[in-house]
Image 1 (cartoon, rainbow, N blue to C red):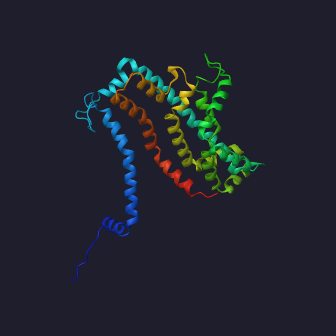
Image 2: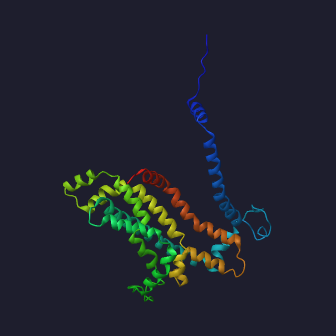
Image 3: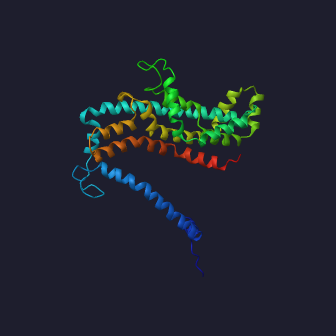
Length: 306
């Protein structure tokens, strides 16, 4: 009697994957692994340095001989630094959340106008908006500073203009972003117009169509915009350096620079890396929490034609 060989489903799946594995896929995997190493090694160096003692900093060893959390305590609690760190964190959170809300809402509104409404000169204005992407930020840096220095700062005590306030770092977010507008417009153009027309027949206003029909369908792309805006605002150094002058209004990025400069000569690298890792944690947490929306948004935006 012949015996039959039973193959488990998981083993069959693995065998099928190995059968279809080509040299091209292996080469692509090796390249991606090499690129990943170039990004992971600096992070591991920061983590290892933040756990080193002062004696370990002298040698050339990559990992500390005796891991210590003393650099974290020294970076945040010595010399009454905790109060400053808490103040800088509050400032950064306010600026970042305001920028995220402003960028997402304004982008969705402007993209809706370009994608779903018909008005004279729409395509011309959209081309002009895309044209702003060709202008480097350093070109508009000085004109923007001059404009903000001329605008009155109503309601801000001790400030006659927008300089040394959060306004230059938050208000421009409510004017949208050219790339994000393009991304959102492409996604909205893929939504059938029949949905909007049916809602208008039922008596829905243009704003309600945007809010109740369009916005729920573009949430993945809005998540991508929110993640990118959060990262850019949280890690922004040049903007706060230009517009914030008093130490009480500094952000965490300026606080790190202040922390480095306070050391005089060479900074204590273990304490500086400890502070940098703590400052970087919110960006990692936000990405890990919303990576599902990020992946969905990238897949959707990449598959939309227009």
